[in-house]
Amino acid sequence: MTATTIASRGSGSSTSVFPDGFVWGAATAAYQIEGAAAEDGRGPSIWDTFSQVPGNVADGHTGDVACDHYHRYAEDVRLMAGLGLAAYRFSVAWPRILPTGAGRVNAAGLDFYDRLVDELLGHGITPYPTLYHWDLPQALEDAGGWAARDTAARFADFAAVVHDRLGDRVGTWTTLNEPWVAAFLGYCSGVHAPGRRDPAAAFRAAHHLLLGHGLAARALRAAGAAEVALTLNLSPVIQSGDGHEEAARVDALMNRQFLDPALRGRYPEEVLEIAARHGGLGHIRDGDLAVIHQPIDLLGINYYNPSFVSAAPGEPANPAFPGTEGIRFDPPTGPTTAMDWPIEPSGLETLLVRLSRDYPEVGLLVTENGAAFDDHLVDDIDGDAGGDVVKGTVHDDDRIGYLDGHLRAAHAAISAGADLRGYLVWSLLDNFEWAYGYHKRFGIVYIDFETQRRVPKDSALWYRDVIERNGLRSA
Image: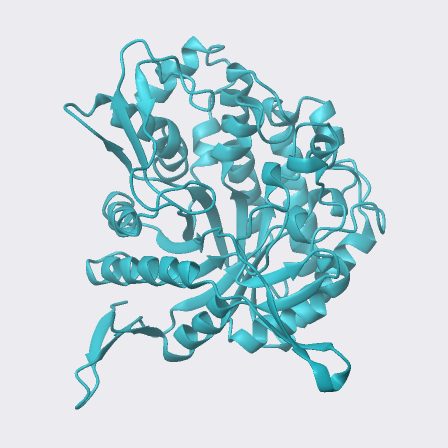
């Protein structure tokens, strides 16, 4: 696949064209949008439990209703079709299928995803399900969660159940979403569910998530899955000042702790040394890395920003990065999003080129990229119609600029040889943004959470035009 820049005859302008067959889409996650938390036999997840504890989520928000996608999925699919999306990445809620994480299958839960997949296909949109996006059944957490080895086996069973129902219509299956977040924000810093603060448990959880990926990948292949993928949150680590040891250590913990076992069948030595100091290595058994190192067809990349670090003797370890004593995580110095994340499109190009260089055996797919900004809905009122609202708009030029910059970086990476096959914007809808509740809006479609009204933002219309031309106009 190659990217091209085509000059328009006589106009002096040009368009950066993406390769033929480049996949354009959007992404969401079950707990963030579905709602219907206690309907049709769904069991509780760790996020249901976590969000009910005062102080864990801003203003006590929960995903009980979220975007009500469970009831409004047909409307949302029509929105996707109107934007020209070719692919939709969604996650399957484990507790909706297996309310206690194992054993009895909840047919009503499978029925929902059956309807969703058929609705997508009926509108010409390819479904890209992710099997785990952080909503572990609470019953499994009560038995030890991802820090317990048995959870990996239960995950493979779950994968097989879902494939048995949807595999005749779904070609590409993603096992995990961002295992670093699930392990280290969930079990180490405690800012995500299940809210534990135990570095040893975090390293065990990271390993068992990878083991679950490998077991699920084997189960999916055995059942006839055409493509298997793994999605990681990845970030170039940039060190200020002299030296590079600090950046290499953070890169090992953030990126290579997951890339190398999945794609090379081994852990970085730096990670083993740090894990050994935090509870030992007894959870890594003979044969585990061979199970983890399953062939995959696509590596999903969730990119938001690089990480900046510097040497800081005496600095305690970052709560989410055990083993980072003497390292300071530096704040951004340039423009940021509403999450205070630095806006660095060049980091995406750097990351994509590195991945294709270091792991050339796997194709790449940007599975998440986007930004939260302080969006405001502006309604037009028709006085002649009795004061009815006739149109709503959200002018989110900052988001358009963000997406444009990152897509140009993606195009440059393809031109430099990166095997990038598609781009899925995060997110289709404003949603429950984890510990931030409903205060941070990532969607290209605005959600009024009081009325569940959907309003495509200017960025959605811009993205529709990008998809239609398969490229970007000259800057």
